[in-house]
Length: 212
Image 1 (cartoon, one colour):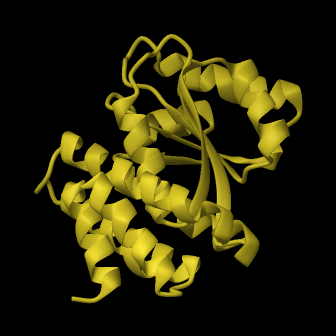
Image 2: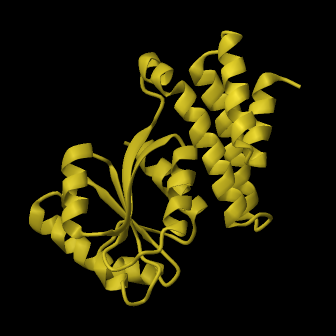
């Protein structure tokens, strides 16, 4: 079995210690950081995304795989930075103010990262002002707004209005999602896109940033 297959299998299994160990072994064998990322870690997390989208695995399995991948990336992060950019775009993602749900948003972040998008995770209960500050600091192409409650859906519209008032709305595309959210709601509040699930968010985001 190749070292890259061992790394991807360890990510799929959600085995953090094995993933980190195999990444370190690959480095000792003079495998480049970008090859470890693209042919090992990403292969594993993409398979997890495929299985999750097909309903074959559930959230706990995805989160364990995400932990394994992230810890693997931490080992090679400094080398990736020295090799140059490895991402196709940048996004900031958060759950809107008043909503503390974090799991769905974490899955979106994971899937976007698996699509080679640099994602800044803003967390949950994020205010419009924090999103605006994030845009000014990180200069993303995409802003992802998650809402898991019917009572917090309106905040997605409020954030979009706040972006307009702050003069940053035309700098980003706004993607919304969450259990109660629909394409009709996205149209109503002036969002640029809607994703029904985390995999859909990654597909939409990659399609947009690669079209620029």
